[in-house]
Image 1 (tube, rainbow, N blue to C red):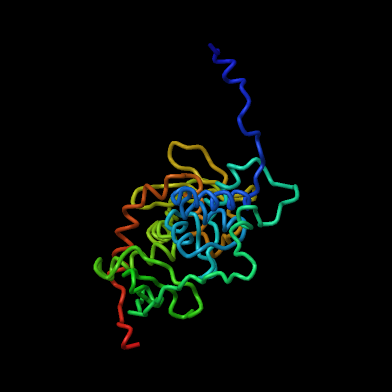
Image 2 (image 1 turned 60 degrees about the horizontal axis):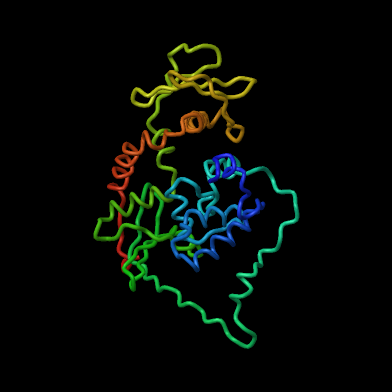
Length: 292
């Protein structure tokens, strides 16, 4: 009979190996052939963006819903700071070795034999059905008629990829608009920034400002030593806001500091944010495609 210490001392069946992000991407894609549910769109999209800088529309949507990706420049999807922090926190450090090319045995075996023409997968036909205007921004809404699924893209960019929506016309255009808001913006960030109040009349101390969101208060301290935020019952937490201009982007700094210092900020204001998004969506205007 083995003792606990003898069992613990048993070496691993597989020696420890170090994997680059591209290695892990190839591994989870290979696993999908054995088990299609082995890896979610969120995981594969995270690895694709981290290693290749691009992801499929379905993966982009999954990442943005999870708060792990943002729109940059109105069209490019990039990893959010939350995702970058996760990749940093759960790694052993930067890899300085020689990375292998992204051509694995698994991928090479899947290549068509010489003389064979790889069959192209038919692309889903998308039929424009409407133009939706939300807060002055126009979106073209299309329908993948064969599967009754709505998609959208910026009306001003005909080259942008279509993004799939979960809501359909049956749920109502307000629900469609609310989903587009959640996919094209950071709704929690926008909600806090639009509704918070800078309590300028409160003397909180040198270099200290007080912000209030319907009774939820936090203090922001900015001086030559940097920026820090404090919530009631917590110590000062340093935050990096070097990418913002204190003169013109104080509101963004205040929200960023709050969300970095309090990890559950998104969950705390999720319900209020959803109600706010629905109110904005209710004011959206819709124009049928045949009148465009």
